[in-house]
Amino acid sequence: MIARDLKHKFIVEYKYFIHEYNESKKRYRTHTVIEFLEGKDLKNYIDEQNKKRLAGTLNKDELILGAKKFGSQIMEALSFVYGK
Image (cartoon, rainbow, N blue to C red; front, side, top):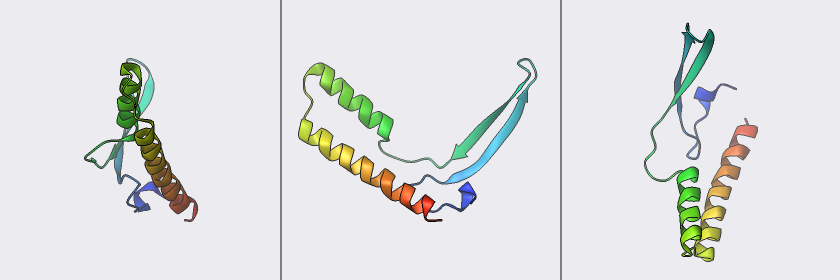
């Protein structure tokens, strides 16, 4: 399976990668280029919830709903990948 062939609404689209050699550090670096997505990602969501927790304004029902949403999207994407 090749990453560019994965087409699913919960998987970002792979565009290409750049492989370069850093002469001064004597090592290769690889950069993966993926599609740009509008909106929140999981890290932003976790950071927001942590700020609310620290401020004492965390809504546990909202937190649970968000965790279920992201969790179900991740599980659907993994199921798709492993079904290939």
